[in-house]
Image (cartoon, rainbow, N blue to C red):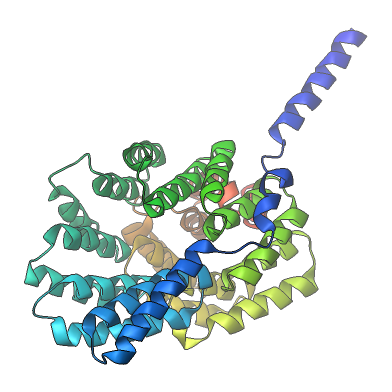
Amino acid sequence: MKPIFYFLIIGAIFITSCRQQAVTDPKDYAVYLQERPNNRLQNINTELDFWKSKLFHAPGDIIAESKIAGLLTKRFGYSGDIHEIYQADSLYRVVNYLNHLNSSGTFRSLATNCITQHRFLQAQTYIDSALALGDDKFQTVLMEFDVAMELGNRYRARKALNSLVDKTSFEYLIREAKYKDHVEGDLDAAIALMEKAYEKIKDNPSPALLLWTKTNLGDFYGHANRYKESYRCYLDVLAKDPHYYHALKGIAWLAFSHDKDVNNARKIVAYLQQRHPVPDYELLLSQMADWEQDSIAYKQHMNNFISTTHNELYGGMYNKYLFHIEADELNNAPQCLQIAQQEVAHRPTPEAFSWLAWAYCKNGDVQQAIKTARLYVANKCFEPDALFYLGKIYRAAGQKQTARKYLKAAQRSAYELGPVVSQQITESLKAL
């Protein structure tokens, strides 16, 4: 009996260690944290200098203005400087004023910038204008879908998608994948579609689509708890473009949320902050500090994030995170309600309504919270944080069985939510 018991213990330890085995390895990505020239950024800057010179010698040249605006938008992906989006927007407005009767292209460019700034209602206006012009309708319908999804208009999004003739095209597949994930909550189907999309363009000589697709596939794999595949996608992307910062951030999240390797995750974020100074990294660092129970560092990073994102140039880009902070960190019930109401007014998605429902609950109006959740969120939004809010709302209403259902659903996305929220879900389930 003794040897059998011994081997059972050894087996249990082995299984546990396998489950907790780290996915990331600093040896794999250390090379991408070293100083190196950014050739893509240099090429953008060279093109910018060329077109700025053209504009200097020919003021009012709308081709030059349009080219500069497009390059500024592209450079924003590397610089993270929000001023470049606003500069591009100003130039596109000038071009559109002069050329709005001849081409829908500038309307689409303006809509793209509005999406970046989370000005979705304005984006819809531009897309409607582009549709009215009627040229390049295929490109406009693609953006019609994108904007409709951002506004929570699933019926218009579906109609736009159905109108596309080629249901095997790359453009169709990536949007069908988004619809499956966000509207139907079918992540497996979304991944299968994104894999098909990747096969379509994996040999494309233009790297932009390949990098974007592979990174999004990595994100999908992570959401499906397929960590090794997610990690491999990010590494493949970085091998092609060491300055593709979203992939590096994905590895940082894997190191933190899955491996609990805060030290190496923090090293990646420190590098990203030097190269790509956007507010997101302060929020990530605050989560790491919270996990380590370092209250001083947590408050410092949180305050840095709040002060930076209150810059009016960011508009509503960070409303999601500011809402979570006001509702769940600062317990500022009136402020979180105000943010939720503003978001629903400008972007009436099921996710935004989940904020509103939780804000009602935080303000003590549990019945209104339940009503909002039933009408606008339940079976319409599958985002993990929305499921967590639903669980807490039903718990507050005393509906324990329903609360448990949503909390367990949120728990399946523990990696996506992060260790801190995952721990809160566990505690909430224990309290039921």
